[in-house]
Image 1 (cartoon, one colour):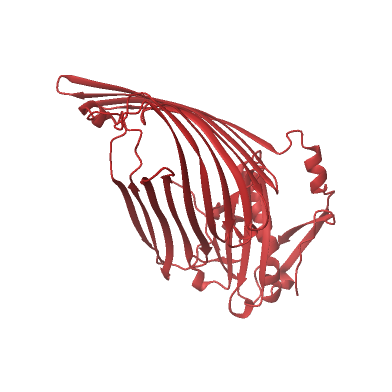
Image 2: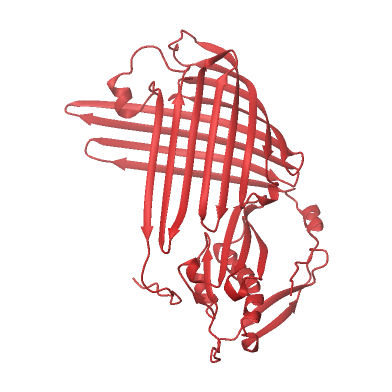
Length: 412
């Protein structure tokens, strides 16, 4: 039997399924495995009529939930159900959208309703139909387009954020703050973004009878407009301006058109994507101090090519990015970045995660002339010349013991 989701125009009923807690028949409960960034304890508590197992190899129903930021400032979830063994013929995919004005409790309750709905065909085939009770609640569902027309904000999302940090040690003290303002408008065809930030950091370092102090300031504003051209192509333009004492920039401005191609349709972005992006643009730099190349200000044309690969599958996930950039008039001044993250389920209970970031740096045209002082080095007051940067990480986890984890206990 197939189950289809109706369009918002036709949906007049919302199905709320309530399963009886009576489990006295001789049919074994479903063995259910879930992989998600969600409140799993709440799912186990609310969906208690199945056996929750910690390893997918032991489950006859597997659920993988993928999520991504959506245009409402919330997240869009895709619930991918897969049957195993006698239930292999049943597959189901549901979607669930949240907005930025929903509380975490509202989000997890809505997600559980979707999980309950997705489990129904598996319960029916497993022989548990006699133990299922359900009710149907009739509600008026507004048309999606009507909602958009009635939206006083016209799909715009605004966010004001800030944070402050204070650290004190016997030999070091630091204080910094950050204030930001972001706007975002996402539709099927357009994505418009702006990002404004103010960041200041003050540090003092004590060594013997000497005291070193520094003050780093950074102000920037960036914006972008991106247009979807098809299921695979998009184009946009990026621009910004900044002031940054760490990178020796009194004023930096740039404007950069870009084009992007995704091998897979954008609707599959939650599961997989291979993206090629090319940017070419103009940059103007006015420096605080004269650079190592004797420049007080300069204009440059620059371009970059980027390839991103992302897969989220039942065996784990992989993300890799390769980005190469250079100045058009001087290809010798360039930068190449390799970043990758790999998480793999090796065998039952054993998972490994690798991360790495490596950059070859040949484009530090902004470095001030002269050697860095001890104060600059200790307090990271100014950017220091380097040929490369390397960061790596590896993590390993192994879980063993009882295969079932239905009990919820949050006591201290």
